[in-house]
Length: 253
Image (cartoon, rainbow, N blue to C red):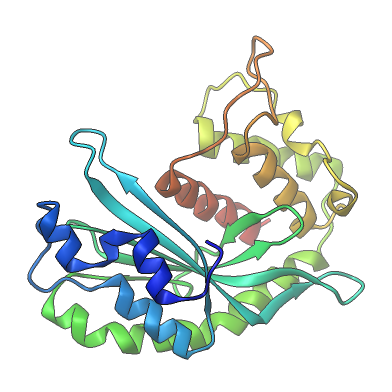
């Protein structure tokens, strides 16, 4: 999304507006926790709108959920030259009818490859139910996540401090493939360790992880057992799930 302006975002993602949802016969819960309120609060904390997406239900083609990615320029992951490698992200996902709680996930967005990474810990994620209590607690939850951002970015930076042996890297790739394809798949996992660019050369956990994640989720990076190029992960919710489970692997690597 090219603009930080919330009005332009609302025009681009009309499902943020309760009136628009009503006009489309999307019945939201009475105590709906609105994404627009979270976006405004994060903007107050210094976060900028960086991306947005709506996802339609397969059955009736109505907009079922929306996703907003925000970035904070003051929280970064740096490379060995002190340059910015990734910036902090806040991912907001919300169902349009309130059937699922609003989810908030702290992560990092690697600029060199436009690759997102989501930390999956008890203090880097939050869910806000569509209830009166959820509405009351929203601002406190958002402020708490904002305070925790620096600690999450420090965790990402720590991933650079440990090197992986070739066997450990292959083990990580094997487990990563199972996250997307499940056990018993027939994908050659060594493809996940292919190096695409100069910045991806390295044996530290951060570098190896980002290479694996990009090869696993982006299109035309790996082939199936028949040698056909595989598609990437296009479903935002599925991409988020994979990201979270991949981080669990490297958090204990």
